[in-house]
Image 1 (cartoon, one colour):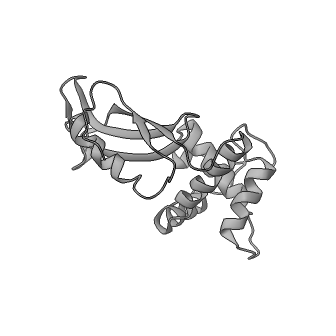
Image 2: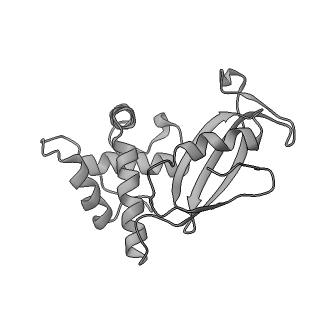
Length: 182
């Protein structure tokens, strides 16, 4: 790859990812180029076929993205980079406080089963519930139909946190989420 983009990984980020991959196979395109292409696509929101020609072919980038998504590599990389970011900021690996919220987003007609109408926001589509730490780093996310009320959808994302963060003792929510103690 000749051109550098703001979405490219730093050397320290790449070295953290390289430990996870443990792959020394020779390739025409380096895995770093493929990761940089994935990060570019995710940040810009472009379509796979619109990936700039500085990156490897979109089919190859998509192949690796799909493979790593299905085998859990992307989630593991996220965990490692989040922990590294927290450590670099002088914080513990496990946060003690989380924040939960939801967002409804429009989808197309072909939204499939995971599609509904959020009556409060008058949005046809999906709703994502997320929990972040005080630095804004993602702890958990769940996507479901928009017609599920916040108080019914929040337990799904809260269940994603179980046994993952030993210090997490409090989660702050807005008025739309009314939960029992978990």
